[in-house]
Amino acid sequence: MQSLKHFAIYLSADENTGKLVEDIMAGNNFLFANGLETKRGALFSAIAIRHLVKEEVLHGHFEVPTNNNQSFASSSSGEQRRALLQHILSEDHAYIIVDNVFESLDVAGQQTIVSALSKAAADTLIIQLLYRKIDCLPFIDTVYTVQNGSVIAQQTRIDFMQSSGKQIHLTGAIPLPLKTPATLENTLVKMENISIQFNERPILQNIYWEIKQGEFWQLTGPNGSGKTTLLSMIIGDSSKGYGQRLYLFGKKKGTGETVWDIKQHIGYFTPSVVGEFPRMDSVERMLLSGYVDSIGLYILPSGQQIKLAAQWLLLLGLYDIRKQPFRLLSLTQQRMLLIARAMVKHPPLLILDEPTAGLDDENALLFIDLVNKISTETSTAIIYVSHREETGLLPAKIFELLPTKLGSIGVVR
Image 1 (cartoon, one colour):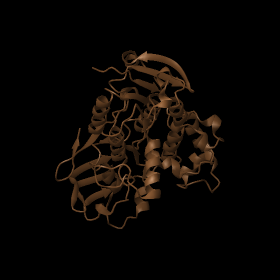
Image 2: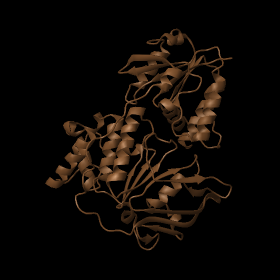
Image 3: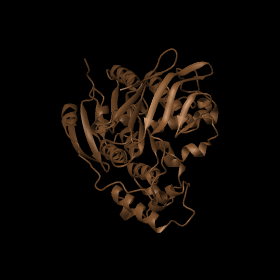
Image 4: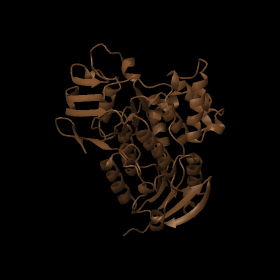
């Protein structure tokens, strides 16, 4: 029988989690933290992972072993999280702080984490930093809601899970393109019997997938099932498409097209691209740079471009801070602005790779509302890649990769 009481702190992704963790480990701000400053604890988080990767690179010492015989630094984010938790649980700790515990993990990986932490909870205090209600660990007893560093609510887990959140919707329409997009064939991407291997290890097997104009697809599959490989062929970054029946925007792969020929038809977003942009550029300049596909704005925009950019900023609620540096935006605002940047020219295809990773419930709903608006108000086709079944997301079709010994097969549902 569980004797310890365990706690979760529900907060926005824009809260200062580093400060919050420091306070908990110093025994401050929460009753359950009293005395923790004298006890040995561990932190399971992206912060801890970045520190371990840095130490490994600097010293060449693999402090945290992985299950794939690779170094910790070269392992996937999902494998890093599994390895770190396994390492923490192998040691003796009075408490463990787990931050964004399910990020980058598929359903099976999440179940493994829950099982391991549930077992540890018998004699180790678990403190969960929680951004998505559905991620609340099953053994949590009490949930504190924190806003701007202060506790605004304290609930039992049952009451917390039954409470309802805000309903968020963007007002206004998606702005029109600057000019009518070039006419393309109705089929944007076509894969016929695609099979891929890496170092004789099968990754994909007999993939048939056709994406037409305006379709909204969600691409799913467990970690390691080949989602990244599939996307790399679509965006032109993989040579594995040569010699196969892969057709991109009306041309067979390897018939004289360049990578730029492919990329000009695609808007692409993954959370990691945020760091590739000049952080001091203004919100407005960041958006306007999407018209010229440049990192930064180095030419004078036209009056029409400025007008349409203003409409995008009004839709996103960013118009009044358009002169503010991009770096001062919240995490969600940065991501939504970069989606708008990818969409200003209304590309035939928009690819969103784990776009809500790290967002909290309220901001994820806002982000999903934008994606749904793009789907319903434009002719842009969408490929939305995620392990998570987002509340309110409205894909028309799902392409699921199912691993087999001969490589993952694709199933439409």
